[in-house]
Length: 325
Length: 297
Figure 1 (spheres, one colour):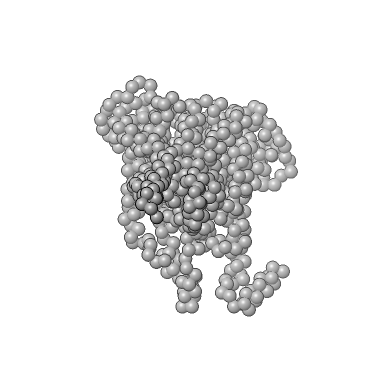
Figure 2 (figure 1 turned 90 degrees about the vertical axis):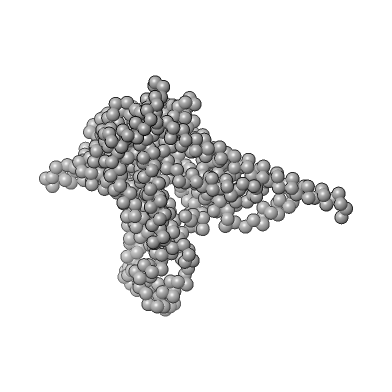
């Protein structure tokens, strides 16, 4: 091969590499722009704005740490501590929900025709909006619903979702569990269960281990990474949950045009953020909106999310096994 | 009859010598599964049936699970004398959802493809940078995003509900990346040697291979967009621009009376049916993508 030809080949190879890099960055460009525009930018912007008071009408006014002070110490008319305490019930129920999905996954993880049909059918609730489903469950829980009819017929007084905080949490969890059962988290578990090596089960059954022993000693340790993933995302999600509670709250509304409002024993933390947007400001009970205050609430809640994620990451060393495959 | 069948099945299994659970345990398992399927379907059945119930029977309680006294009156009321213009809401939802699905599939498959298959300087950095988005709690972004759209003059438009989908979704990108790792590279390499450019490789080879996971992502984008309540609640003020899910929610929060229950059920049915149809057609691919080794922590 002549010298110029070799030089040409090397050149063209580096040119190809440069071309590949340019095209790769072009392919990634929308995602990078989106991430900067819709996540990093707002994050920085909102951190700054949380030191201002702003009702969206008049120009923002710098107030220093006042918003954080108010968020921690004041009632609007709910205090953030009440709201976070109420929210914790949903966080603590996350493992219960995972337990239910794990039980169902154990029923259907093997790849048979019946199991495939089963998985397709029980996934159905996951496609329905929280809104539509809550409406259907209104037939159970509304003032005129099935449960109250039964209570009244048996001589008890009717029970509204806002009457008892425990009942409120139960209704939200009940509908949430129905909506999530057989959904993505169950499919992740099915996937994890199918990745447990068959040989381990065979060894266990030769040793004479029963179902529960096999589950405790073999199956569960091997699927702990999947369970850990779901606990982290589930808890982070439930600290920020809002739509489920907002829809269940509507079960307590009496008649047309009179939406129910949260009380200090059932308000969730996210409401303190959303009540500072124009649409929900009228239900907030604090008289008008303050974006800065809402953001201060948001960052305090975000801090709790991070604390939960870090706590889970630290605690995982005690129970999550990554090295058993 | 059924006991006999179980015994026969049990015998056959024990003759084969395979280690299966006892026939009675299997019977219990199948009944539990049937019960769970029933629990999953019952609310849908009740919703659709209620939407066709004769409105004169609204006061009957407990609500009936079987009735032959059906009518179209609730549906007529819903579209003619309703609080919210459901036809308009339905079309708005379709428009927003189509834009969301197209944007999500295009932008996240391009990014996933680049990260999985292409080599370029800064790749590791940009991967970690994009994955760090998982640690940002969404609630911190809700208000600043609102302020931003407000300042850009897009408050009370549908733009905030679909434009972000065209600019990537790091979770979907991550799913695609994981899926790609399980696919062979040979086809792409062969095409490159034959002189195809990267865009051709992406369009002609990668996209068809990605079909199961793309359909899965499209399904979740459809559900996410169609069922979104917070977006419309925060960004849109005019009823003529609202989505059907918002209108259904309005029905519940402002008009949750028993007289209107059948109409509410008709409204809920409208909001559920399109997704249900899409699910039925896509579920084969979807289940295939989910139960192979794609979604892992």
